[in-house]
Amino acid sequence: MIHIKEVAKQTKITVRTLRYYDQIGLLTATSKTEGGHRLYSDEDLKKLQQIHFLKGMGYSLQDIKSMLSDSKWNWSISLKSQLVYIIEEQERLKSMESSLRELINSIAVEGGDDHLAIQNLIQLSNQNKTRLQTFRESMFNNNELELWSRLPKMKGEDPDSMEWIALLGQIKRHITDDPASTKVQNIIRRMLEKQKEEFKGEDEFVDKLWAIRKSESQSEKLGLYPIEKEVLDYMERAYEIHISIMNSSASKEEYCER
Image (tube, rainbow, N blue to C red; front, top):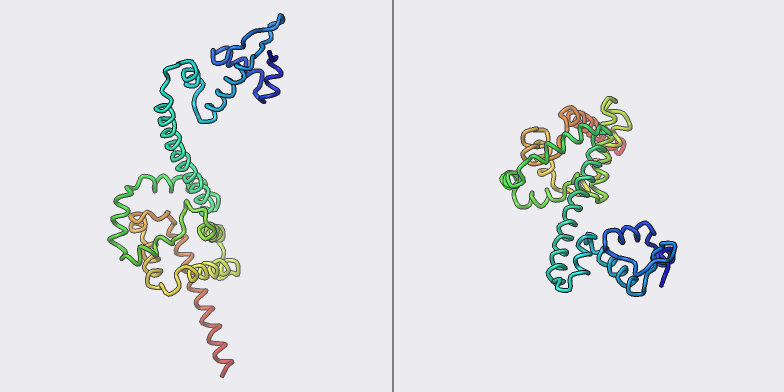
């Protein structure tokens, strides 16, 4: 016979837990010492192993109690049912993970404004997914839909999506600065670099997407994350300045070459 403290030491299951198992009739110690301490047999230890094996599969203690006490228990049905439950739980947790990542990224885009990020995500979650898909298919041809799939995603954890999110967040933090400032122009420069990396030669699609982005109603119909008109206008001004600077530099280089 093995003392309860030794069982706890060997199995790394606390004395408190072993006592609780005894109280609910899940694992009753075979005997006790004169001082009232529980003593466990080898059979008790085997049952304890079974309990924690099944617990590791997600079964509740009440279910385990029924499984181990009912000689007619249908293990095949029970295990299949538990497998279905685990798969559904994984999907639920995956959905929660995706929502958490989306909220974290949204807060980054909003420059730390958690209330605005939450409000925007609530707005997106209320949209009809079938209607969104139908509208996209009406707006874009097959090639454009393929390009659409490359756009950064608020739920994404890929490096490209994360960098776009960070760049948008930086724009929002600097929105009170002069759009011609070095900091803002560096952000715009990197945005244009990323645009060329992903959509080189697809200027028509990029221009079409920007026109849609500037329309609040069309952006909403397409399920795009809401960005305030003030931010979009600021980005456009900064972009125009960037192009002007680049053209000016190109003209100077051409003049020098002459």
